[in-house]
Amino acid sequence: MKTLRDAKIGDTVKVVKLHGEGAIKRRIMDMGITKNVEITVRKVAPLGDPVEITVRGYELSLRKADAEMIEVE
Image (tube, rainbow, N blue to C red):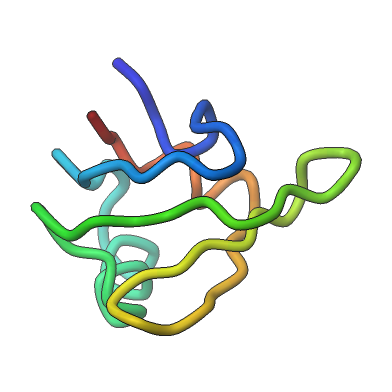
């Protein structure tokens, strides 16, 4: 299982599944990260947290813990 956390800078990946439950999953979905959407990894901080991505035409920063809940291909 590959997660968004494993993607490298410049990779464009497709969301397969969102893990987690309740308010955490709802918050990720509210940010526009849903199944089959494409995400481009723009930057990763030196210690890996946060990760800056482009999703649905806008830039977004995600914590490492949130990125690990997003399964991609």
